[in-house]
Image (cartoon, rainbow, N blue to C red):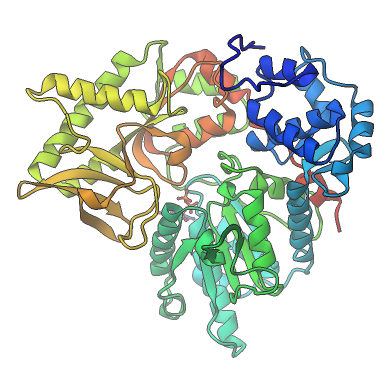
Length: 578
Ligand SMILES: Nc1ncnc2c1ncn2[C@@H]1O[C@H](COP(=O)(O)OP(=O)(O)OP(=O)(O)O)[C@@H](O)[C@H]1O
């Protein structure tokens, strides 16, 4: 337990007393947890410190990505803290006006929720289960038309399942053919609608981020193009993908509600959501309430990847909770068609928590998996990054935009952190410093030929999305920002792309949904709170051909042994409900 000594530290909540004060000083609770607790309990005229503590731990849980906090689990998590006796604590919470009017806290068994999240969790469960109960139908003949007979058994089964169920969760690691399965499924649904004389099927393709939506559209277009039957291709021509926010209709007056909801449903017959692991509980609640009851929902994603930035691990909870039911089946694809065996085996070892295997695979000397065991990553990263930065600079100076973009896709350095010695900022500066040392002039301006960049906000007008990448390239003496758009490179004035950051390095969180030929993963120290199994799995699986892990064996083991574990009651609720 790290004790904060400085009373002026921003993490210290001035005026806190008793156990709350001690937990704040001990770094267990943040100032923001205490401020919310103080405000809420004052408004409710509740002076019981156990209730204030309950609010504080519930706020802390949401900050950490959990939907609730398990009071019994707190004791196990940190036995150095003098947590209250759970039974006494529960009784104090149950007696508080904050569990009634207005309802701020909700206690269910040993799970304590901020009321809003409890409501969303209950709603997601109810809506999913209401859409879960239909029997299997006969396998349509068309399955053999849209999927080649050999090598596509998993996808054929997955599509058959999704045809039979109103809601299907389609899971699979990278390159397991999820999009291919979706394209085939959509072809069959469109054919069925046509055979029944129904109007053209209204299909929505959506993803949590602009970049993921753009990639989804590109992948679906490609797979639709691969369908062998011209009629199938024709029925699915012109499909567009968009962000979930766009689908539901953002409203300028509020960020909490959307234009489509239970009283104004989406018009679509079929809604496909890709990268569903990145969808938060709140967003899933909004989506489910906006669907027509007879609409078909297909949630596609990899539950082993990092979960949403906001609270919840909905996809993993759905896979687990629905997996235990009889009235609905999860469609799982297991065979990867993308990367070689070595990366696949390493990813599987990390995912399954087999630390010894992961270390052995890293050390076995396979050309596709490299382990740079070091506490000092500087020399290794210099050897890896500087030649690439040089090449990128030359391509930028030559006006060779395609080459510059290809170099970006050829290699990526992924870091867990933004700040600190293992963070993106540090390594971005370090590469620029190395480059400057070699040049007669320094890289004094933010924009320079060969500057790799990452777009950090959607700009629908320009057609660029949060997560897009690009490089600065000289064209007729003028520096231009060339973005690797989904439909081809976009050549823009640097002054028009304002929301960008340099990308000699990128965070693993930001890398979700993208890939590079070669990936270098810089592991943080063992103590890093970000170092988790999901983080390492996500980083490794960004590599198409080669992955290089830089760090210590201890960090690899720490990551593999530390699954994120976001608390929620959704799994139990789904298993037991209905
Ligand atoms: N059964 C199969 N046999 C051989 N190749 C396949 C098969 N299914 C898909 N592919 C090919 O493998 C690649 C990955 O497929 P696809 O894009 O459908 O996977 P995905 O799971 O959606 O990938 P991502 O990780 O990008 O989400 C594509 O090039 C696709 O054409």
